[in-house]
Length: 235
Ligand SMILES: Nc1ncnc2c1ncn2[C@@H]1O[C@H](COP(=O)(O)OP(=O)(O)OP(=O)(O)O)[C@@H](O)[C@H]1O
Ligand SMILES: [Mg+2]
Image (cartoon, rainbow, N blue to C red):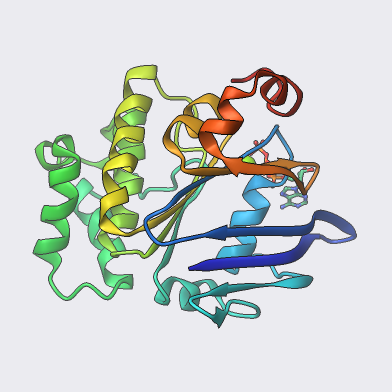
């Protein structure tokens, strides 16, 4: 579904990503793990079109993403839940979710809300509350729900577990597992390598902007030497 080949990108004079190649298939959960500053967020920004790719290619169902604006990439069915969530604090839960629908191909707003509320019942309970009043975990669910309201085919998540309590992380990751059956591809970026590898089908290790390792997630998670060397003991 998504094929990224030998992609390079960076900021100003600095090259951050060098020859990065990754693939994500339909219904697959793929994790990118790597230390602080490895270039994980930069990779997602480049796929989403908010950062220009310098060399290499990215294709989504054989459509080239190079040179496309983020809204056009969203129009192809790719959604990014950015680091830090970026929900609208002054809008209600429901209004936040509807901002996701307007960008999508979803004809029925009510149906989109129903689907999100089925995944996250707490959002249904709080639908008329201001987003700013939600807990961190609920805000992450809202950010995820807003992306899902747009019926994405590829969902990209940047550090969804950051700053959340273990019980909430558990809940969010189990929702990702449930989404597997819906044929959505998920690209999950995490510093929390242990959690990411537990939910993912395959994974890539990103080090200093380069893919140094890839394979089935259970294999990477089971290899203690790999975990220590590449995941900074985080796992
Ligand atoms: N807007 C920017 N302008 C200049 N340099 C940047 C910018 N954003 C990131 N960088 C640099 O690019 C490198 C990779 O950053 P990036 O945010 O992609 O890493 P990351 O793997 O997501 O890290 P983290 O786990 O901390 O989120 C870092 O050296 C960072 O300082
Ligand atoms: Mg990041």
